[in-house]
Image (cartoon, rainbow, N blue to C red; front, side, top):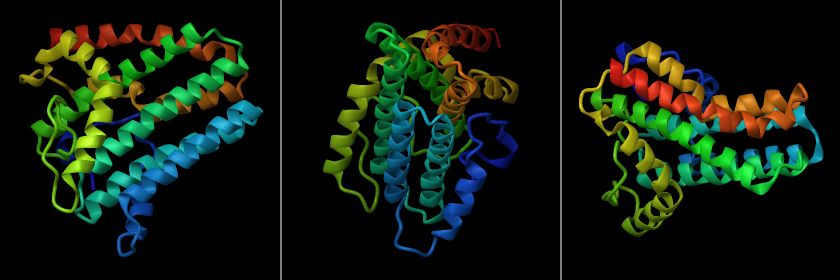
Length: 253
């Protein structure tokens, strides 16, 4: 299953974990394992990746960050296969992502003796990049009747779906807004018109997918393996410049 109908799919460079994630989800279809269980497993995988950064086991970082991306795809696939979409799972997933991203960059800052200000700037850059990618992707999914658990504008608390409790949705949405609200507002300000029939051709979405979390984590792992740990934080700060390039291209279209 896909988040988009077949005729609107694009080459997503960040979604390399989905084929294996789909196999995992299919294998768990008739079990008691839930999407939330898989999200918890990807949190564990991400934390093991952080541990590998701190201990200098950089091939271990690649393994656990790629595994994290696979499990991140699998939880959504399992929700679609079991027909159990939920806002609880959507926000739990996103909250876990942003906290793990912070831990990963703090660990890199620690082993490279990078100042906390630069580390936090790289973290903010990484999140802004991911927010642009997700914003455009969610617009496509809503426009073409794909998966709609994520909303284009995350401003109001959604009504709980069948099988989940409203109080859980309220709590997790509040945490989501606290952690992501600032990044969302920046992207809405820069390109709020994208949702109003703005063109998002496949080639542009493929280009923007370099900002997808899976691709970001893969880059981090590979840069560590080849000995470029000192360049990771400066890279993610500079990498943010392309946010404005992609938005400019989208507006011209």
